[in-house]
Amino acid sequence: MRLDVAVIQTRTVPAGTKVGYGGIHVTSKETRLATIAAGYADGLPRSLSDRGAVYFEGTRLPIVGRVSMDSITIDISALPEGAIGLGSLVEVLGPNRTLDDVAREAGTISYEILTALGHRYHRQYRSIASGRKRHVQ
Image 1: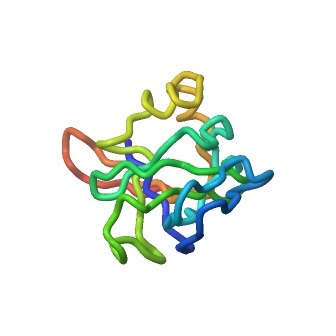
Image 2: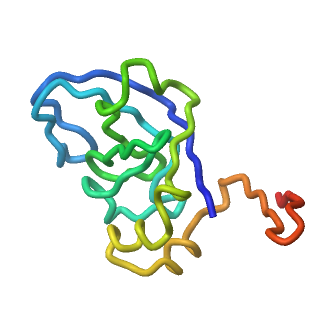
């Protein structure tokens, strides 16, 4: 299973910036952030707030602040400047980030993560045996 989500915004913020609803995360230094277009309305648990992560080209990018209804903020400071931008896809679930990984960080089980994933995602089913794709709307 793989779930990739698009970046909808990037910005650099100074030290001391409060991130997310209620400002639960405060940056300790200048930090490059990206916002991705998925949140708890899409089935990503709020319990990942300030503790989960996503990946971009093998690099772990921590979730900072609260998981919001339609968005999540991630720290992209570990990436080279300009490596990620508007429309870039980050791996929420995939080779670097399994259902079990997400479930463990969220304090739940993988089945709950899988069944909570919302209807706004485009789904593409692949037959492992034949390698053929089947699209479902």
